[in-house]
Length: 79
Image (cartoon, rainbow, N blue to C red; front, top):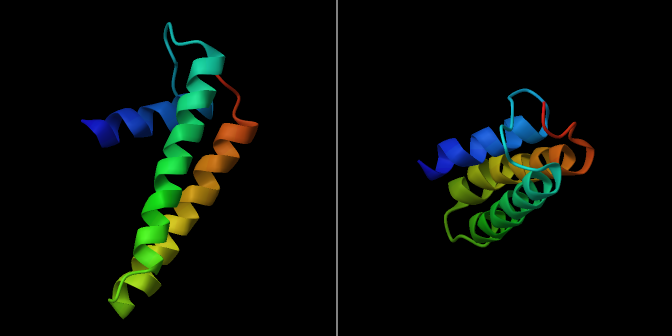
């Protein structure tokens, strides 16, 4: 459920989905929060003792951080 809500938030901020009654400011703030959470996840991945986790999941997580931050920064807001 949490991942579905996070995906909806990012897609709504990017203008792909309607945000319904949620304000642009709230949507942007939550999207930045998701990016921050993913950044913490990335730190955990890159400090892992597992080489595979550092390389694979660290890269995937970092990509998600960058893309989510771009949507938060440049998003169209409610569509």
